[in-house]
Image (cartoon, rainbow, N blue to C red; front, side, top):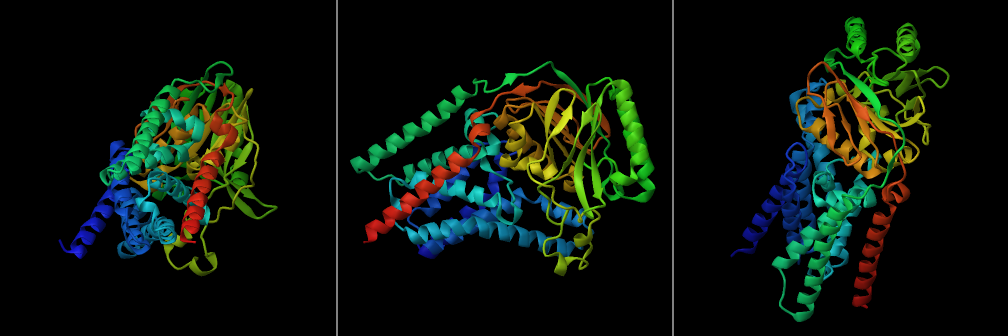
Length: 504
């Protein structure tokens, strides 16, 4: 058959395989699809040149992010006042950039070492490169740590590894397993190759079985009585969120929805629930503080904090009543909270002038919140998807709290992916997690990453439940992602050295 036809079909298969990956994540959760898709991708790299690897990996990434991050278009078009054609172009450029970022490591790896794809170490090399690729995406240009393949494994045997290795460790095991399957298809019959492949297969079985055993391990311990929690989900339409005429109706909605929740130990409002700057909201905040004190409850709310001395604005969480503390968000959303290349982009189109795109980054290593005798590790919206950031606060806290406004995502799959990532943080840290949002999903997650209470989306409602304060450190809280990343760099470096030595 014509080689160009084979290449065309292989490239199309890479595109389809990448596009199928999000089916393994929320809200679909068909996790075997990720293994199959990764196996197809790994198979496409076997025996390929650097340029072939670049094409296949770019197309895989194009499908991967084109389908998995499609909710970006909703934010730009529906809520960013951007014309349809321009919104499509901006979304396409975003996806293309991510696909290029994804493809470059595969290109350089294959260009440096053309033998590695056919070598018996190929599954391990593929796995560590996959992990380094995910890690790279966690920090380049503030990062986009979304769509990691490990998130689809909250309910599989691999879940047991999450408190040990974190999300990158799950990705390592998955990529290794998939590449082993790809290598199996190409397996030669030489005794040495067959033996090493069988040993690798035994390792795959051991990793999955070991994860199943670890699922029963309790890494953390109860540190007090159950805490009752009530959450307000006000369901404020995004186009009315900052409208002056809707300010009082929003405050009245927060008051009325909270009225039956004061019997709880904690009452939680979502991100920027109070549609007034902190120093302008004094009368309302004093009223709510007095109400919480009267009922012996802790009120925790999102609010925009205006620091007059520094002339800065922060996206913050404030404790009132029996709660204390003020937390400023550290990881900001590009364009939604700040404008990259502001000098050139500000004012060009409405999307670059969103009402909240003037937020400043909060300082690192902030103190958490206090509610009674318990410490809370806070995070706001996008921050919950950064495992390292969450682990810093979790190690010194009893409960995790994240507040968000997912109205920006509309009816897309974004909010469901967001909740799944929050569940993984609870599993990694061995802490209960509270997630309060404007329009859903809100919920409570236990130490095993199980969603034990949840709200409906796009509905004004309240939600009540219990969280249990926990103490102790999971291995992931002790070491973070460093062991997995260091191991990946070591194997990558060893492979580079071995290839260089073989050429001499």
